[in-house]
Image (tube, rainbow, N blue to C red; front, side):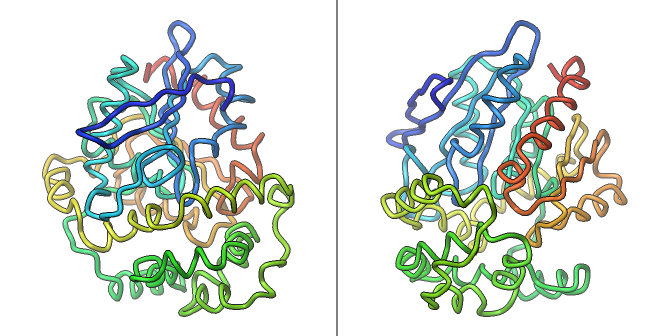
Length: 335
């Protein structure tokens, strides 16, 4: 992130955010880049340095709460997506950005969706990678109902890691087996499906020491990448990252969901680019079709990439080119 200016800001009384930014060239919009679990703003390094900055676009890339240099509250109730959207609004105002194109991956894609649903006045356009737009829902979280729905529509439950992630000792179990966690997350789509999408799969994988040396995808074979990932999560821990999941399963912020739905924010009417990862079992690229069939996406462009969950790491040039091409075509509309 050396090409950007590092900044810190207090949101509320004592919650610190660290983010990295640079202004756009005249007439071009700024992108707000939201990472997922268990990443930081550095997830976007290649996209920023090799694609967005050369094209003149502005960037704001925060370490979201629970990650990196930002605050890490231990109470999961502080991880309401509605509250985090309010935090991001403060960041945008601090940068004197009235409207941004919001970009998200993984949990960041859900957060980007909520930025539109909760603060549409600050969203000029939306880009999500892997995970399609998540419209507001008035229903409490119910794992059994979600599991049955996923099994019906995609043939398997892609959320079998939730029981571990939301358990009392989930963070401790993952922290004790960071090497195994690295190899399951960066071992490719089929491994993620075999481990994360079956009951008890993640628990069994972590407990087998042999899995610490399992093969990983080419981008993750870089020893420095692996070391930085493991060192960071050993230092920061998994309590913060898992609090995002506990906030969802604990229905923190459900009132904001109901309000957004009542306001019609389930219909996305700003320009939207969906980059689907065809080998990602956690977020099947076909999910966008259901939203299209319900006429919830008024101005959508779909670009599929043959890659797994971290498509921007596996296919950086393809993803970066797709985003800049869409921006170059759409920025006159959304800037």
